[in-house]
Image (cartoon, rainbow, N blue to C red; front, side, top):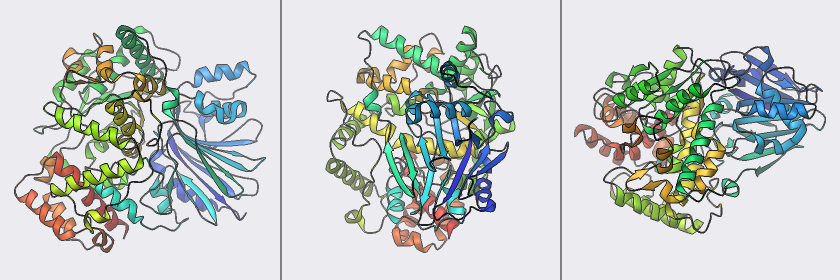
Length: 612
């Protein structure tokens, strides 16, 4: 896990060492254990790397890495969990390895299979490989976009990096605001990350499941992974379906316990993270495999005393089941303003809330020298977790609209307009121009995939949430918030084998009789606390935003709204926004709905104010 960067001067002039160093310095938080660079023979190309040492933490894993024959050079961010199996296969074909790293396995896989290596990998990655013979550059991102890759192409140069703010702050490209993206983010904070566009007009995102060639100054981008094309045939009986899910999940956890440094987990007390830590304990009892970390009993629990989203009792129960003594981090009213500017800067985008809880808990891992965390991300969007008690009707309506929206682009536009109308009727629509100027949806990865005809509205909605909207945004947040402290997050529920299998299951395996994640709950029978396994309460891992905005954030919010930011004023009816925020604060009526609709405007104004 690292920060990667690269520069190619398209007119043949040399890349200055200070230019690549400037990029890698801006990524230093992602790789606190070392810095490396490599220059091509004519010095018109440079790779940069900041290292977070997890696999082969000694010199063997140093990057940029050059192949034994000197032809290929790689910079790589992520983990290929099945690198041991791939290494044995490549050794049988004659490959010779000098290190114990997964990076060297990728280089050998490239030499053996070229782009075909991608479908053999089980992991998360953003990588760039340069061919010194043909002077061609290949870049690729993992199936679901867990690890980021941003780039910019001008007439002068091609530049890429792990973070948008590194590119924007490098001085290597011009920087301007993409107004369409900004307006879209304030209306729908989940509507951008699945696209190729970013808040910076000059910066593009290589989408999840895509790869890219740079040949003679021209980019060729193509999609190499489409989940719907890889759905397996599922067993006929429910018992067999449950057993297969259990096998896949247990193996996904086991693979992600491979580490040469201590590992742990962020334990919320909900089903997902509890299933992970309990399965980690079961894996140890069954017998650890090669390169598995024996130092894994590190659970970190964020608690919110007195807040509506505190799950400490459940976290304690899960930790006791796994025989782990947890580390508790209390997050209270005083933390509403703790490192607020730094947290927003590290998140480097617009979201529906202030992500203090995640930032603070990953900082706690760093303080305890635990640099890998197995977390439960992806399960909600994979198996439907957004049905809460008393919301069955709303859940049915959302699925119906999602099924309609998935049918065509015009249908999506109609659904989008309907949603905007509902937001306006709630009093939470503040964009100038009203509904007649509602920002159009961007092209999102996976939204036009042809799905099985027998899929119902729920499966269609989950497919879009997983690939196009909600999950890409969550993955972006957790990458930035964890890597702000040099922490690698691994996600067993996002193992591609488990994902394709779960998506192929009938809807009744995901939502039935008031329960979500039905198949996973059945698979974890007798393997975790029963009260958590069958608990219906769904609490997201979020800061207690209603409590904070009704109290300690009130002054900060008022001060922000008083600032004059011309770019923001051009897009937003600030007077109406100020009145609404003032009423909510004075009457202490902030709730999760109003937070989710209004915070993106506050977040956007803060970003524009900082960049002015």
